[in-house]
Image (tube, rainbow, N blue to C red; front, side, top):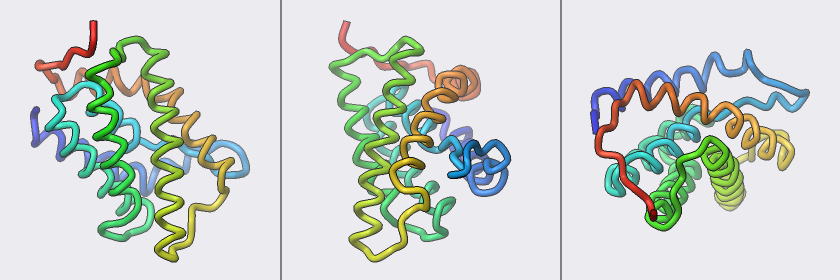
Length: 167
């Protein structure tokens, strides 16, 4: 794992997620892709389990900062839990095809979004506007854009020690 590249990637993705991403929003719910979710799925699929767990929590922390400005919140917990789960699930299920990557991003997007919503409501924070429609829209948009960004991330990160799932 190239940690300096990862740090730059997280910084850029967080800045884009916070500022520029609204320019490609669709529908009246302002649905945008979640770049940090796509990155979390990428690292959970492509890295070793130890690195996948670390990157999931770091990306969740960045997602909390981009979404709410809080330093530690519901997205840190949900990204960490579901990123870890995806890293361990990758032992059993091989995720290599574009369609498998898209389905994985969609499912992880729904799970992390719902858990973050539940945790935010429990903590008394205001949930994301748009409710379930925005959650499904963001997960779908991320699933469509994700496999394309996986190609870019493969090239940028140059992860040589790719884990192999079940054969």
